[in-house]
Amino acid sequence: MPLSTHEADLFEGSRGRLEAIAYRLLGSAGDAEDAVQDAFLRWNAADRERIETPEAWLTKVLTNLCLNQLTSARVRRETYVGQWLPEPVLDGDRMLGPADTALQRESVSLAMLTLMERLSPNERVVYVLREAFGYPHREIAEILDLSESNCQQIYRRAKQHLAGRSRITVDAAAARRIVEEFLAAVLSGETDPLIRLLADDSVGVADGGGRIPARKTPILGAHDIARYLSHVFHPTDAKRRYIGGDPVFYACAVNGGAGVLAQVGERVIAVLTLDATPDGIAAVHIQVNPEKLDRITRQWAAAGPHSPLAASW
Image (cartoon, rainbow, N blue to C red; front, side, top):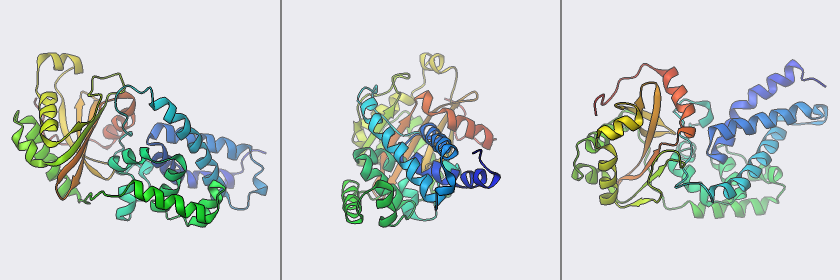
């Protein structure tokens, strides 16, 4: 039977929640949209009169679709060129979902999404549904066709795998100060100012996806990260020709954290996210893979105009 207006509205009312779940599970806004669209097709084909709780049914269908993608993604990422990082999303995008609590904001940070790659698919589902969306273990167990006690054990294992982080939550003003200090340091041409901002055991990761030159292994320690970034941000005519001109740098709020956005013309060419901790910036995630910057390019243009922090290189 074709969807009634009520049934169509019911799905659309759930779309934002479903996209937010899928994004946290897959780390890709594009893949999340595809998974939600597949869930819609299954909703359209289902015997909807027999579905007692549509929201629960849709969550279960979406979760199973994401579990299938997570399993195949592990295989694809074994051949991924260089380091894989999640797709960055500007704050305010419904893809990020609820951000009322520190745990919800933490669960969608680029650092946490990257760490969650360590988890098994079931661990990731349990952690996301419990931490970010407050699902009780009983409902998560029903979604995964597990016992409640098994679900609780999986949740404990997931938390153990992700333990040890001390990221701090910063407001918009503090985030901008972090970005301003960071950008001034990397554009100074000197490493010492940047070393002072970074935690001693900080980590830098760049994702070019084999399409843009990027470091293929993590950069460990403040000194090595400072040297790498000073080289990357040092202007040369060859770099200008490669990227198509002089980049303009902006402060942005990405995945609940501080970020630097670089734009050439109308195209976002890079997004750097800074993971702030009490000891300094603990991680710098550098996304330059064009496939993972399409959505944020559209978002950035729609939210403009913006005031640059640095308009010359």
